[in-house]
Image 1 (cartoon, rainbow, N blue to C red):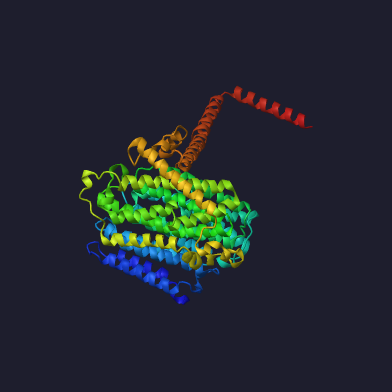
Image 2 (image 1 turned 135 degrees about the vertical axis):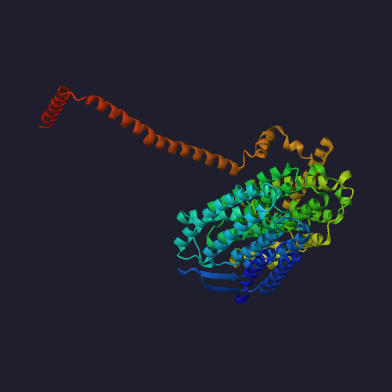
Length: 613
């Protein structure tokens, strides 16, 4: 079976190259090739899933191996990648119809699927980095073919993720040096000394790919500028799966990052900060896609927090939340695409009343929004409860931050749903119809899985998630395997947080009379208004801060260059000319002057000799 593993890379990549060779005037052939490629990819994945197989061959010389390993964890991620790739491609056949650069879009999409498969299956850090960086290039390309500011956004994403990837490169080199091998399954290092440095560098690469703070700020820009299916397939699903997969490999396999270590504390702090800061920004957005993009960032925090607890409940919750997030976030972006295509805008101030025109889209939105908000009995509720349990075991402050994030998440989705689907239908939208069937089917399929993974959550937990943890972790004995939450008290607190979000929305709506302004009392609160203003202006954007520092350093460097240039080309030249001019005036041709200079020199020599005797 191992000989079939390379098909998961070669089939999407060959199809992508074939699509690029087809002239633009030929219709539907590119779509047919793309659908065929993702279908074959899905079939091969289903055949290989749950099997243990390895493909290996010499590669690049110097003892490097092109080694791909399919086992339970990598197979699970590849299966999810294949499923999302298939559904988003079906969706794109309608959404992208008539758009520019259609061939490039499908090529980048397929190349992204192939690169993700390669990075997940690679059992060699150098090989994984090869596919990892390839995905960065394809992300750049897919963003760049978007709107008028797309190239600027693509460059921003390339710089941010590229810098973090350089950190990961250094971490790979250091880990390989310390362990004497680049084979992932053979690496085992402590989180101390140089090994601790390698751990941090690798974590930077993993959480950056997943979209965590502070490597996040390109995602909201891409939500506006990139083609919408890009958001559903990459920031919402593939990059989250890949980043969190590698983070789990780092913490569970490569390093001994056990409970109570500084490494565990670092991850939990990053997780809580990402949850809160990103959801606070989501709360004030007035664009459908941009609001979703900030939630794509915030939800990564729950995954990092869960894995960072280093306790079985938290780790399982973080991994379960990884797949749940990919499900409901992709579904949410697809509903946003339906609204954009049918209503012509995603500006929440220009929407309203679409429920009566797009009931299927609204139903899918409702299920996905309830899932991400942690409403029982949908899938997000159960993964969050596990994360809460693990966080509370490690410290109340982490649990409190995660619970506050759930309150703000629910509040922002009440605002989004009210603004887009409820209220009065605008005159210009009275002719709006439901999205075409090829766009509805992927949304319905993903929403159905959200329901299934909630009502029958023991199925994914038993068959997909728990086998990832080592047997000695105690995970198989967790009560969650039966499908029941671990703590009734935590469930009660979650329900209180959700009820508080509902009351908050009613208060805001009554105060402003507008669904889109229902969170303005938080936005313009005295303690928050100034911070929000700075954040919206980009003043607090880590990328902008870094660019300002880069500009400052560049300016200082330019001034130093000019100073050195002035020293050599102006000061020294002028001083030489001045001295030469003075010497020229002293040499006036008078023998008396020359005799006096000679006598002065003789006196100086005699004085010097007397001093040294």
